[in-house]
Each structure stands twice: as structure tokens, then as C-alpha cells.
Image 1 (cartoon, rainbow, N blue to C red):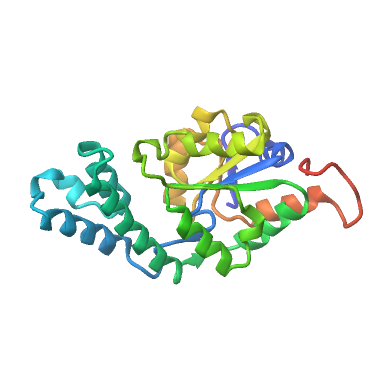
Image 2 (cartoon, rainbow, N blue to C red):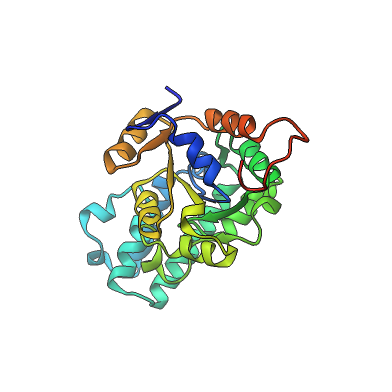
Length: 251
């Protein structure tokens, strides 16, 4: 099933029509960042680095065994916010993400969808918990940087402001002069959904498999795509044939 809605079968075209500004999460909707560079190994290396500094008791067993390097980073920040330890750990994660960007897998249909949305006049931004340096590297490698720049809002030293906090979404909206109701957030995790809710931005879920789709639906996402293809087709259909006119950003 290409997409599902809880109640309203017209919700997807409605979301597209309203989207003057589209806020994209990065890892998931645009690419699989760690497809060729194990996130599990990266998380393990971060744990080993922390413990190598004599801080074995800093992490809980659950955090130590996490497959997500961001879990490790945020756990350390909760106990030592703003410290040199956190700054160095964040930089180590950024370097791993930069290496991963070279072997990231593009999400199917993401590239043409990004170019089509740009062509019809909507403005695009990245709102991610990954490093903005990583996002720029990946987008440049795909010839997509101009579709987003300068609106790339990623991880900063203030880790408490990562999603589900809406900070990066609010930064994007403010910089682009956009009202929340005229934007659309595309994300693949519950923190993406919660950040969009807190920012007042309509949310479109993307999930690369049914298990992830169920997680988003159970969290309250009303529209979840398991492929970006129907979104691309709907966008092209609503844009109309070349030269048909229409207001930019109201596709």
C-alpha cells in the first residue's frame, strides 16, 4: 500500500497544496546515511571512547548497548551538558557521519521529488539531528545543495534542542518567513512527528518498511508513506503540464 490515512483520503493532496515551505528530515526521507557505514559500530566506538576516559559508569546498560550513536551522545550531554567532553564526542560523531555520507544510499524517488518541488516554486529546508556539515556534503554529491541552501538546520552544540524539540523547525520557519500552517514536515521518526506538532507544522511520515510505518501511525501520524513515488506523482499531477501557470508554492 503506497500510503495510508487514518480518516481522510484527500489528506495527501491537501498537504501538498498547502506546502509553500517543505521541511525535510535528512537521514531517512533523503537517504540512509549509515547504509554502508554501520551505525551500530559507530555507537559502540563512542561508548568505548567514553569508557576509555575512565567514565564507565556514566552510561546505563541500555544506553551502552544502544545501536544509535545519537542516544549515546545525548546521554552524555544530559550528565555533562555543555562540557568539553560532549563537544569532543559530538565532533567524533560528526566525523563518523561525514565518512558515512560517502556511502549513503539515496532514498528512492527522493532526488526527483526534491527537484520537482523546487521547480514548482516551493522552498525547501533541512531540519535534522545530524550535523549540517554532513548534510551539505551529501547534498553536494547529489547536485541538490542549491535546492536547500542556505536553509540547512542541523545539530548544534546545544544538544538539548535536538528533535523532538522544535528548535530547528522554528529556525527554518523564521529564516524563511513562513507560517507553520503553510509548511510541511517530512520525517521518519516519532521525534520528527513530535517536533512538527510542537511547531504547529503539518506532518507527512515516511517509512521504508511497514514496521516503521506502524510505529509512526501508532504515534499519531495521520499520513504515512512507505514509498515517495505516490507523492512525486501527485506533485507532478497537481503542478500541471509545463506552461500551465499557477501560483508558486501552491502546487
